[in-house]
Amino acid sequence: MKNNEFCLEERIVILCSRLNLSTEQYDELKEMLMVGPNWGEVFKIAVFNKTMGLVSKHILHFNTTVIPGLIRRELLFMNLGNRERNKEMFKELAKVLELLNKSGIKYSPLKGAYLIPYVYKDYSVRLSNDIDILIRHDEVEAACKVMIDAGYIMGKYDDPTRTIVPARRAEDIYWKAQMGNIHPFVKISENPFLDFLVIDFAFDVDPVHKNLKIAEDMLDNVVQTDIDGTPAKIICPVDFLIQVCTHLYKEACARHATKETYSDINLIKFCDVRELVLAQWDINDKVAMKLLSARARWHNVENALIYCFECCQLIYGDDFWAQLIALLTKKEENNASPIMADDELFWISLFRRQG
Figure 1 (cartoon, rainbow, N blue to C red):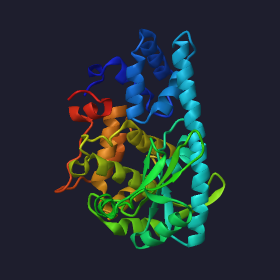
Figure 2 (figure 1 turned 180 degrees about the vertical axis):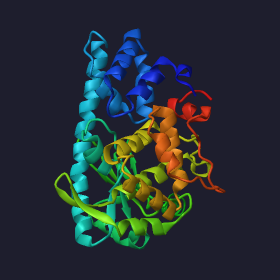
Figure 3 (figure 1 turned 180 degrees about the horizontal axis):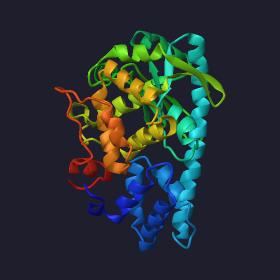
Figure 4 (figure 1 turned 90 degrees about the horizontal axis):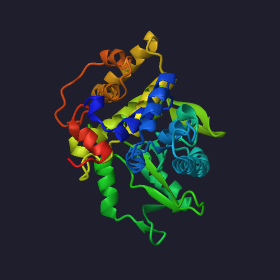
């Protein structure tokens, strides 16, 4: 779809769903805000796309001569609330990392657990619903024991009663068979910004093709680092980018789509791909680019990277995506049919339009 096919509120959210804006982009945003958008629609679209932190960051760049004072205060409250929520979540992550370090389990934090401190570098701008950790399939039982000993329950948090409903055995089996994950572990929190904590262990990096060897290979090549001062092991940069892309590709494929029609597709996931590339990759570094191509080919996940790069190109319009796409060779897919950003259904899902 072309930019002129989006309404004002949609264009505002698309523009703001990135970490940094140029001077020209801030000027463009100011012009749109001065028109007077429907703020309820802006909030709704940003919330569904999990980019409210980024949207508020950029709109808060302006004073009350551009945006209403009430709106500015609400955005500021959301921004500060998300910061406190993430700080509390990272305190719990530190405890979990210490337990995993002692257990000897091979692991790596994924998604926001790494992206927030190392890519976004601001606790207020990226929403994180849970803590994602990669482990080996043969260490699932050991990880379960660690979580149970830490006071977690495999189940789902019930908001009205503030209780945890334990997962049925069938639910756990489904998660493991279809999603490449253990059913999430939950613990109630007393922090007012975070009612409950969720730990999500994945053991299959590529659930589309169900290749457990990829996770094992990645975990054999972790890098020692730290997260907020706590020692941690992270899969290497090339593998981290591959994991982000394969996870997004899985959620974009028809056979993994939910009954809500691709409800797991949202702008923050494409933003993660973009910001990770911008922060940690130099497309003019031929050695690094050759490594990325070889690693994607080795794991048979070239289509996942191509999909994410093509969608980012359509969403953001950056000129470097074509060079990255040219590194990769698209392969025939018999069991995957991802929804593309040039498909109206893609935008119906993101903007919650009536399709």
